[in-house]
Length: 180
Image: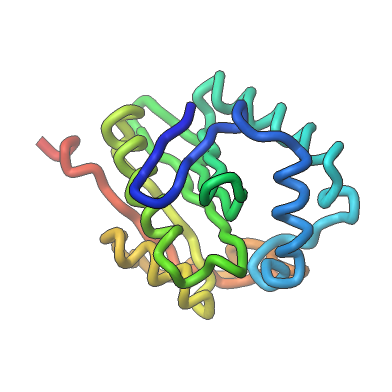
């Protein structure tokens, strides 16, 4: 699947390869370190990313998760994902995203998130998208706030980021179509 917006292209794992994904992670390894789990050296290799892409394709096919890679023309500049989708009475998922340092603070992630929200609510028929962000990650908090997510409080020591258990602000966006 490929989705186009005004400035970017969102591609499913079926449309990318491990070489471009590993290059994205490698060039952003220092920038992303303070916001991500500790990564092994193998994580930055094409072979490892090809394996992860296969897993992402399986998630897509089983409707457990939808990861989109964000492209500006032919350049991979980030990714955004709806993870751990649970249907039934819950109809919810977790949001995750990351952007290339060179393209941060230019509105690309907000543009991607707005389009992924449409996909989540109109195509997947989800009721709720949840995102958890470290309080000090002001740029990421600004993205969800521009997209009208609500701050529901702090989850203490929520995720182990860069080797440290970090508090996260719990943000939620509800699909108002489900409220009737």
